[in-house]
Amino acid sequence: MSTPRKGSDKNKDEEKNSDDNYLVTYTRHLERRLRSLETEKQLLETERLRLDKELHTLRTELDRLRQPPLIGATITDILQDHRAIVKSSTGPQFVVNVSRKLKTKKFEAGQRVALNQRTFAIVEILPESTDPLVQGMEIESIPDVTYSDIGGLEEQLNEIREAVELPLLKPDLFDSVGITPPKGVLLYGPPGTGKTMAAKAVAHETKAKFIRIIGSELVQKFIGEGARLVREVFRLAKKKAPAVVFIDELDAIGGKRIQVATSGDREVQRTLMQLLSELDGFNDRGDVKIIGATNRPDIIDPALLRPGRFDRLIEFPIPKDEERLKIFKIHCRGLNLASDVNLKALVMKTENATGADIKAFTTEAGMFAIREDRKQIKMEDFNKAIEKVLRKKEDTPELYS
Image (cartoon, rainbow, N blue to C red; front, side, top):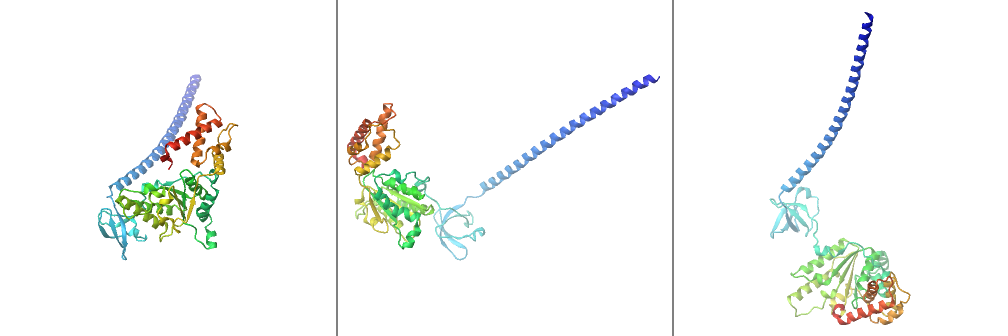
């Protein structure tokens, strides 16, 4: 009878062990499931926070879009009781109140402001507007032209540096001496003699903002537009100071004034008078230097040439033999020249050539070598290039005037 009892106890022990193993396995499964749910909960919480932020952003944007549009206006006068007289963009003038949040702000005549559409109260101060044409005149990067890139103009460069560069780099020197530095310089001479390159070199050395204006860009169709562009150019220069304003082809707006003139001539004269006012007006220009350039100094209005406007007149003549040799060396220093190239012989063949002509000679000589699939430029290439450029210059003189 005892034997069956032992077998029964053994079975019970096996069943108990099996149950224990099942409970352990099931417990581990539940723990893994719990950790998975906790991770999923954290992900859902993160997603909920992200969606809440997106919802808040969309509601803010919707509220902003639902706001009524504001009216642009310009302040014409400031009153004592926190009110102002403004001229609306629609035309009429209004006496308006100032929003409480702007009570501490300082208002000036000429400022651009935004008005509430219902109450016409000033609710915002707008930034100054700049004409896109004027913004395009500013060259963002500093020009990469240095004085070493200009040959044969040592005397001219020294005069420009004294009049433009030194006042920007060493203003204390002029204060200690007790003199006022020149306000502007006028570069004149035939086309291609290096006037624009000299202005770029000054901007590079002074690390100043370079604003380039073509004189013809200031000639506008409507009355007063040219004068407005001149004002905005000088306002931009003051804002970006230290700056160099380079007015190329100055004769386009700086020609001598005549009594008998068409309506277009009178508009050009209005632009010229605004330029005269900006060059030598009541307001101080600060660290803004003016460089003008022209090929026709004989037609420039005398008012522009008097001291206080363009104080220095610097001539850029046709380079002489020694100067042309220096220019040839500058333009040839990066070229792969054959041993038969004689720069002095090239100088003798290019009398009356300008710096721009010499650059054209080197470019065309390189093109002749490329056409024959050569990696070196020979003397023959230079001879062909000189003949080609000079012949083109003689056949189409209007392109080089």
